[in-house]
Image (cartoon, rainbow, N blue to C red):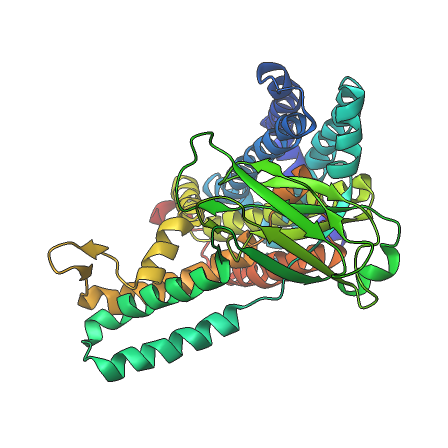
Length: 461
């Protein structure tokens, strides 16, 4: 450990010598203080948190991520190019200790910078909250500055898949379909089946049974919040649609009617429902009545969910920062792995290229979902089928699987909407991002660095 700490201290000295620590700290504080000043909120609790949490934490993550990549690539590659590493490698210290010491140095820098900026955001949030009107402060404390768990209706993906295959088989029996058209046909049938689960026709209703699970034991006398989102089949002249809700055990005196509510489509709505409306098994029954002349569609993914208080904001905020710290860990590993066998400019280029690929998952997902890299062929009225698809689609699917190990976490969104960042989620982040993904990159980086000829590295590049 003494050797690891010595290398870590050398990394700190390099960051201080190049004024990286000071520059990044100033930029982080400027983002924390400057963004809320430059971008005015609308005076509501949600607009307030969008500025102070969403924008500032996103800016902190971006600044720390870029500085982490730059330092990770530079601290190892520059030491090799300047022949500093040769004087360290001849000492009684293993290559893996040098590599790991660099990583620990970078991560300790990140820990200090993230703690400073996170504490500044938290303090500014608490101070600025006192400037809001009393009603908005109440909304802020109940819906944002809290850790809320979530419960959704039973997942029907299996039912959708089963019904899709049944209708697919019936279609194939009744009419011949070419192999090329099968993916498109399956997608069309799946969307039709999903519509049956999502659609609420005019003048009709929809019932959801939402199991609160073990949370029912501590939710007695606690208010619940219903978060809904719907799409409309047609536009409304007023831009909104009327919705009526009933929540509670059917045919019981505790049934709560909402009365007519004016709701806009394609956006989230959140409203409070009284406590103790679920039955003894912890099942909350929610009924929606559609009095409009057009059908409304509640998406299966995020159409409806129940939010309930689960803990305080301070610890929830710390867990959210913990997931961001995990992201910094894998970025530091990526930069060091690239610098283990590349020069500084090339290593930085490769690391930024990988980061760009991470932000291109939308395109990759589209290719995987459509099964074609060239998209829709309007002349043939089908997705383009080429030999390239047999290579590109499986490759993109594998890349997406790796990227999603780190990307399937949204602590910033959770914090800004008052959702709970659980210990289990933080544990999964550590396991998937740091241990699995970071461990694989670290093993590759240490292996390549251990085999690299340091004495001739400068001349070979």
